[in-house]
Length: 465
Image 1 (tube, rainbow, N blue to C red):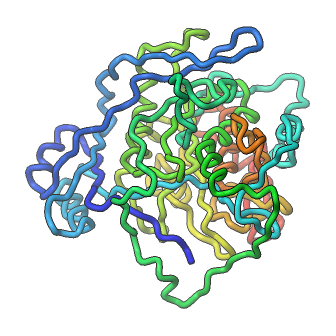
Image 2: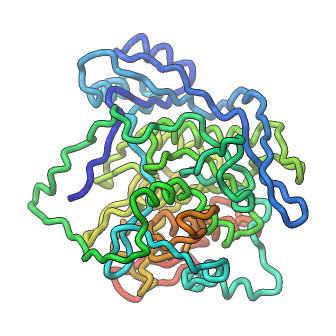
Image 3: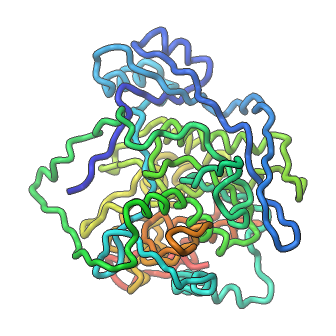
């Protein structure tokens, strides 16, 4: 049975011009909550000889945001009226406001993978850097052949921003992560608590009204299966595993990891929307990397979104506020690579949001700048992985060897699957393309030109570097 998605009970998210916020609060039974704190410190990795170390870098107060950025605020409903009714009335009354429920956002890593299917990720105590760097996934996407070229772009001058989970900080206040994994680490100050009691089911999870049975694959057991406690640690390093793929594909790019998701790989729409905007605003601050003396975040910029909000129908946008934020970033020529989702256990499913914005073309800018990515099968690289939702593009996402950025359960490496990791590979490809001088609005078209065409009608176009 498909697990229900959630929303924050009694909460709305509104994206609108700043001057309209007061009128929204006066004319509707809602109260604008005080914006939560934003990061005041980031951590940059610095190299001394062969040794990497973290250094904390304080941030000055953020300048006034550019005029094209809408204000995004969380409101609480102060009446007994159902939240969807308030959202509908607010959107109809204030034409410049994009309102929606504060929906749950989930990371898209599938703990079940392979054939037969185990129930957890698989620990790899004997794996090393060579196993990670030479795995078949990199051959399938064309990296190993590309590396044999004498001269090649490596993502130089491109910033890759990964909004995902993070392991948090050690008692000494530094990240629990190898500083060689990412260039900038941001510990987002407002994490949604795990098992948050305010979550409420978004819709009835009672099954299909047509009586279709869910299809589940066989389960298998292995002594190397991660326990639930170990899986919690792996989920906390989910962002680091995505970063390891980006770093392998585009070693010259600057990789920024924003630790936004909790150890259940969940957050709320408001936090995601605010983090998207904050990173783009960071590009206009005077803070520079202490080694390169360049801004921490520069353009061209590629967002990796290995996460999603449920979207059951192509015609229905669940999170209008998130669409508004993605659209305005897309209009500023940012490229957003998004995982399609892991819900298709034997039955094709639509993309999750925000991948759906590019797949179905919800706005012109999103159609051009949002790249939805599915996972392809390890056995048949032009076929969807059995769990993957559909998308325009596919990349290896089944049974990958991943670098956790720290030793967990006796090993730094783990075998895991999900559209999360397919998106990470494509993000690396996009970073390489942009480092050649390719305009950001041409990145999606170039991926399509280079993609390997499927051999069957039910296949997927596989991204090639």
